[in-house]
Length: 202
Image 1 (cartoon, rainbow, N blue to C red):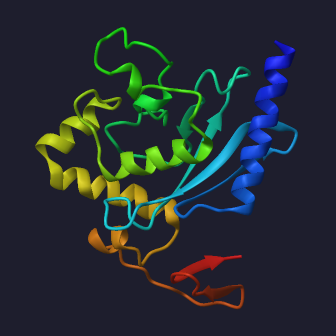
Image 2 (image 1 turned 90 degrees about the horizontal axis):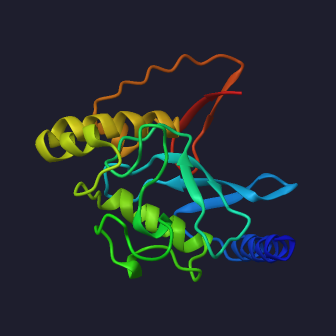
């Protein structure tokens, strides 16, 4: 077991170094605590031209001691309204399911976890999930039902969560639900206009 843990730790440290050297568009990742390589903090940027465009969604990725033989778990700590995200934030996509045959028969073994997956491929799969919700086997039944039957209401709710996640009030999501921002300037406040307009109290 100790050897397995050591191998997992070395692999995760390598992936962390690789992401630091070669950042990938659409997300950032790092350790929650420098002393624990098995728990990562990930920030995913909402994909352009989707309901989540402009949002910044934080998640915790927790790796098992026998990684990469078993998949990590991923849980959004930011609010998320999506058919494939449980109400408590846990992400439900095929590649995060244990390897082998699906006992329920919904997924092919090839769609589930394999040791070739990395932090990068996991997060890119989550970004793809945000772009294309799957309501056939939902984690959040209410979100899936609203996605199918009341698409307009779903879009508004997703936009509200997106707007709150970013603290940026001129994103497509905020503008789509008519957010009005009133700014009162004081000596303690200043503008930060890069990369998009923000107002903050520092």
